[in-house]
Image (cartoon, rainbow, N blue to C red; front, side):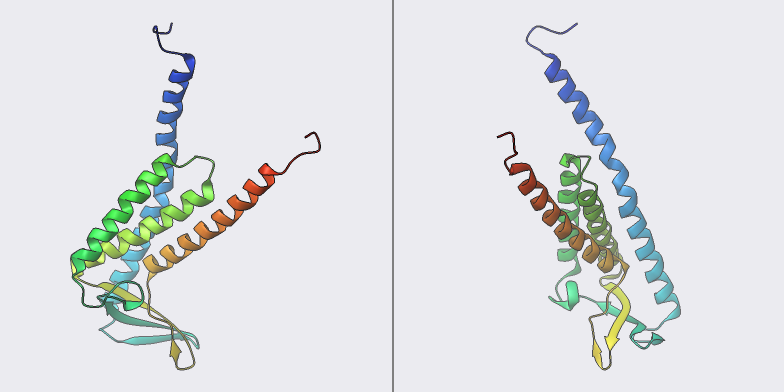
Length: 184
């Protein structure tokens, strides 16, 4: 029985909203996995390597322990770590809100946001506990070295790439949906 002034539409919207909140929580496992993998690999590297120690893996890859006090690729080096922690927390809150409002059927977007969330929090943990981020993946070609990075950085980059792919696919789906059909 419905209350005066309420409709079936109102109650189904509430049920969809509740289900929506619960359905998108399952993507957070990906964030937790990124944080765990990031922290475990950083602990292993800091346990077995001294600062600047390097271990050659392939002709194009070394493991090299470095401390990054800046942002991505060491920009803003020397800024207070708490600035970056605050920025990471703000990004995490924005992503959680976005995931909450995000349609359940957009899996690529949810995966991308979860990867970015895990990466941002993985590096924030370093900044809050160490005052710097542990970087150790040293990709190079000859004498040219890409800035060292870690698992969290990789997750952020993969997530950003997936966001771009999702936007491109959404644009194509939108164009297809807006095309006139033969029946028009």
